[in-house]
Image (tube, rainbow, N blue to C red; front, side, top):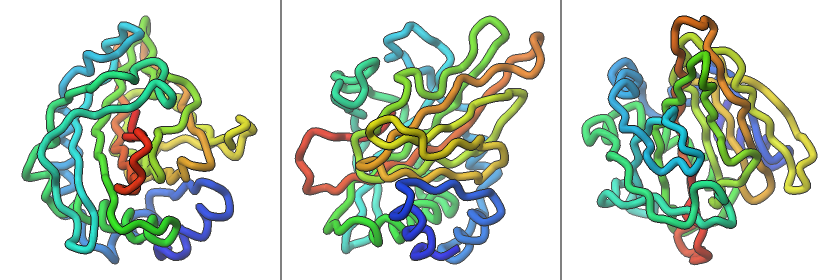
Length: 245
C-alpha cells in the first residue's frame, strides 16, 4: 500500500485499519525496522502516568515531540504534553510531563521509518508548511481486579489533525476493541489491534475514536497492551489543540 492509496482510504472514510503484513510492506519503502526488537523492548521501561484523574495506576508512558518541515523531521527539546479540557475532560487542562522517549531509539530506524511514512500520508491529506508531531509510548496493564483502560476519557478526538495508533505488542490480554465514529458519534467501524504493526489511522478533524478496556486472559496473571501513538498537528494552527491522550 502506497501513501497515496492509504490517504485515499482515509479521505473516503475518515479512518483506515491496516493489518500488520500490509503495514510492514508499506513501511519498507521508507526505511527499515532494523531495531524493532530493541524498540519494542523499550516498552518494558516506561514511567507511570501519574496524571490520571481517575486515580488509575494502570497506564505507563514515555513521550517525545518532533518538528516536520522542509528541513526534514527532527526532535524538539523535551516538553510537556498539553491538551485542553475541550478534548480531554478527564486529564486535560494541565501540562503533563512524562519521561522522554529514549534518545537512541527516538533517532533509530524504526521510529524514523514510521514518522517518515506518516508524513508522506498526512501531507497528502492536509496542506501544511510544518507539522508539530508528538510520539507517545503507552503500556496499558490489566489485572483481574483492575481492567486496563486505553481511553479512560471515552470516545474522543485527540485535538490534532491526524493520528496513528500502532500496536507494538499484546501479552496475556483480550478485548481492547477500537471503535471509530463520526462527530455525531455514529459508528464508522470497529476492529481489534491484535498483531504487532496492526495500525489505525484517524482523521481527527472528522472522526472520534475509543478503545474498550483490556482484561487479562488469566485471572492469576496480569497482562499488557503496548501501543505507539503518533499525532500530527499543523504547526500554524494556533488554536490551543496540542494533541494526544
